[in-house]
Amino acid sequence: MVAHDMEHSALIDFSARLMTDDYYNRRINEIMAKSDLGIESLEQKLKDIATKKGYSTEFLKSVFKGDLKDYTIKTTHTKYDAESRAIEKIFFELIEQESLGTQKYFGLIGPILLALTEKRIIFIDEIDARLHPLLLENIITFFNSKTYNPNGAQLLFTSHSTLPLKKLLRRDQMVFVDKDEFGVSSMDSLYNKSPNVRNDASYDKDYLLGKYGAIPRINSQLNLFDTNKD
Image 1: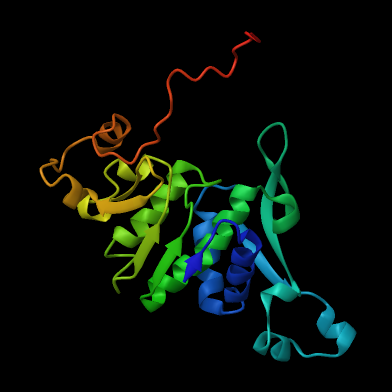
Image 2 (image 1 turned 90 degrees about the vertical axis):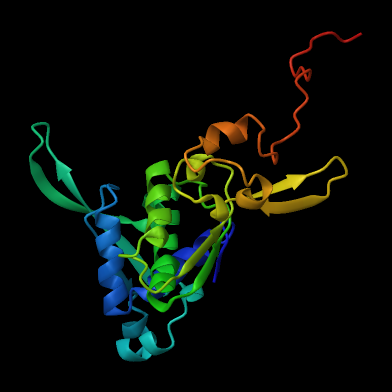
């Protein structure tokens, strides 16, 4: 499976389709509620196309396609008064009223759960985009945990964040992509690139210091604010 950040709506559709299954509905709700997003629950509803066109809900589920948008995802929140007392439940439309970060997280949870359940390999491009660092940490932890990943599903992702280098990954799990002066890219794992690196090294700091390569060659003399027109 491939989860690309440019396919934001496609990810949401994928997770929405999974919610027609009771198991995935329950698990997605559980993860979203425990991720401190202020969301207590989600509800996936097929729109009243069933009534308007005379289709049964069972038929729609059997041919359900996310790109038709014949569903809504509503999130449940609790509204509090000035004294922090719960006064009512309010409902938001996921796509229209929740943040892009929340939408992406929801979109990723479905494919991730499917991969963990069915022992699949999932590729996620720019996994850190729009996500809080702790949510990113949780996703990586899912795959490194024998409890959550007993079947050995695999996660391959690209990222510009140094967070995954902070003890979340082993040396053999870190792959750096380096581009030479001719624009030719090559990649190698940290274990192969620097086999003598200690297990307790500060990978994130050493990477930014250029010890492992694969960092931008930014001209330190570049002055974007030069007002000299001569």
